[in-house]
Image (tube, rainbow, N blue to C red; front, side, top):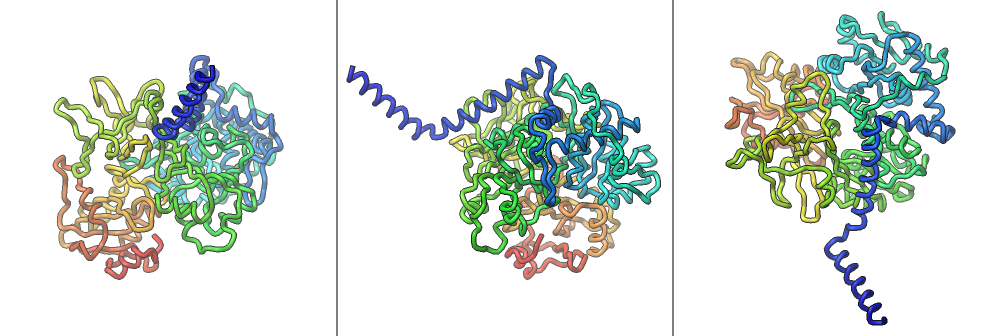
Length: 620
């Protein structure tokens, strides 16, 4: 009996030793995977029973369960779950009385971060409408395209956003788009006011059947993303994707007792689905900021007892760049959720501000795959394992960067890379992981799909991202391929920027790409251009042109003058070698120019200016 006990004890100890040595993340993986599977089962039940409990339904449950708990805190004002429920009821009642909307309609929303963004969003959803979030940074032509592509015939705009519409208001009126401003009065003809009508509207709920849906495939939102085809595309965000996004904070271990800080724009899925939706799922409180301020961040965290914050890589870098002061670890923040932090910034952030777990995740707005770094491994955007790969079919395939194309074998199929090698991330499209595509254009949706990848008949989503999976199954982001790059937390379409830059009269052709800048996350825009015969470069005109037609994050900061445009073997503009060569005037013989905000002009890029940029003395 004693020997049997000793044998069992030794076996148990050996098992623990082997697990620690060879499977160090086993229990953390098991706990996380259990959460994923349990939530997946709930989604499958919705599919089978056609009884979908949407994010809005969950919010209304919370409004009944915890009516007096603060939901949104904004500029020292607290709005409870009940407050938001009643205010959004008023929004629904106004439009119901006006008779301009019906279930299934799409309504465009152009507002900055403020509580009424959420109130209008929820109020429209209570009427069964899908809401299209519009990026308030984009300008005239792109903005008009966004309205048209999502099929909206009604637009709700914030009182501080009317200047954005000035150029396109005649077009909106000509297209019979009903414009509503969040104000009590308007001096613009043909603009409906909303704020005055909300004051008189009842706060009683509208009929529940208006918001009810029997399918997780029903569109809940449209969120615009810059892609490889030029102008922004309206990604269809189904009820399924909304529910998955709302589960993100819960999956990381955030609870109802946490206070979440958000300064990302609400038109982004990270803020709206993961942040607002995540707090709704938990019944937590969300601190909403108009925009991010590095100087106010830590004082806000102490003031509101923040425990979790949302970030993009730039935010962590900005915080590391502020002057050091006493008591920087004196706060309650225990976790950050986001993406895009460089390894050196990650380590510096934790060393300076305390043991804050940064939970990176990977997933595009329209994508059907998500990676989550639930372990907190520095530098990784996610983690996989044997079981995760069986549930979510994905692969990393060989890619030729110089020629910008997938490498195929003799049989015409893709080949997977080895562990530790960079490959293009593809995600299998099936009933478990559907791809809902983009509104208004089947061709745009089809362009994102690859068929006959490993065998005839299979279909994969091309993420456009190069990733690496190491021998411990951690996933790392390496680069974006093709015609997009990321800057200031926004995706930039090189095609869209090239279309805008290329129409200026002294340019024959423009090739847009992103280049790395020391001390910055992402890549900043650069334009390689060919001048029209007999024309000179006009830095003042180009500055005024991009200032008028492009948002700040999309404006090329550098210009390279070339005699002719180099192309690849497949007749695409050559970007790879341009990206590799960067913007150093000491190593580039072509004329280079820099967008100088102080002079409101593109000025010659000298070695002195380059050194100042490289040392971080000029803010890009």
